[in-house]
Length: 88
Image (cartoon, rainbow, N blue to C red; front, top):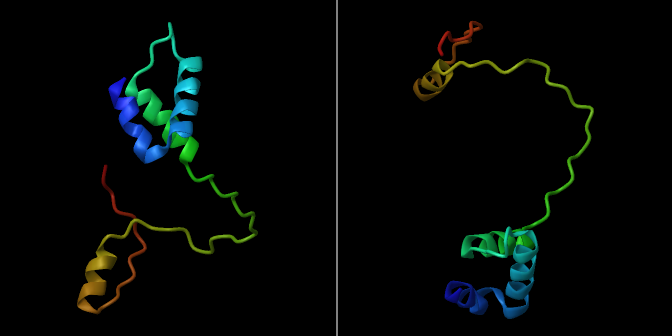
């Protein structure tokens, strides 16, 4: 558990104590690993996921797997290939 104490200067004592308490609550038989404490600490400090924006936009043309398009962009000639590539 010396590794947990080594986290204190970077994360702060209060944050590490909370992470250890949460890890102990979820641990089996009271055993907690350093990785578990680091994981809980990272989850506590994680940026919340932004809400998804509802939109009425629709894709007018479906995307195609046309890898030859990139080669044509390098040479400067653009060719439109409407067939899908047949690969696994």
